[in-house]
Image (cartoon, rainbow, N blue to C red; front, side, top):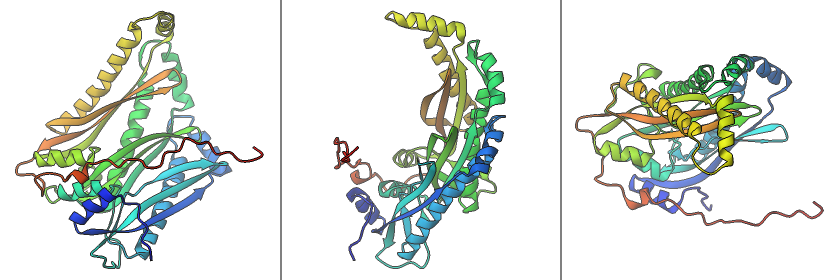
Length: 372
């Protein structure tokens, strides 16, 4: 039979260096309806703000169903593992489809009786993980569906008349983001891992609510102690190439750190900024507010890293999200610590591990359906 794989040429090359050959593309999906009762429950839960547990459960179940079906298909191919595992969510006609796609890999084309591992890393990233000493165990994720809440909104709305941080909103966003991190660490702990690496964080809207989603690979590294609890699991959102470089220099990830601050410009500041925006030039009210908010978010992750006795926080990224008349400032990075005699298996990465594949399908033609 013709082998069908989602692996690119660069991925296949990198995996061959670690003894793997490409296998079949595998897919799993699940189509869900939230249901009338679920909708009423979510409406009630959303009043107070924070997590909407019923919706979190529905989304988690849908993602897990799709993942389990994909894994079952991979096991039917006798694969050693699956790489590039995805977890997507699309909505159509009031229904939501959860979709997982990955590519099977084999060892010397032998058939395995059970799947050895699953990872969110593609073939290039998996090379970096293996060469940095991490053994992938299982694709893991943590999610939280949440709302700002009507109750918190009433308190927050009064405070938006003034300029500065709205702590009620900051607390909700910080709690939900750290809850997603705790859940992915818990999933990894159940898999017997001592680390979750290559974490990708997504913030999405879903049916009037927000979902915070973290995806990554539960792994085991021989230089890290066994995790006695989810709190002991090392977490990192460094790209796998970044992580390889840092481990080559002797730095081990400690924890993904994040901080969120929600700010309001205030009615008076908003009017001033609006009038100034009519003319050309700087808007000092916005400049100072955004600077203050971003520094506050960065300060939060600095404090979190200091509590972990980390040496540095690397790969820091800042994001701004607009929520009506509020601005959310988020800082995220990975705390690292120097570890004696820590290094990678190879002296350098092969070029194929860092080359980004180019798109060869470019479409600018709109689909025209006769009669529409």
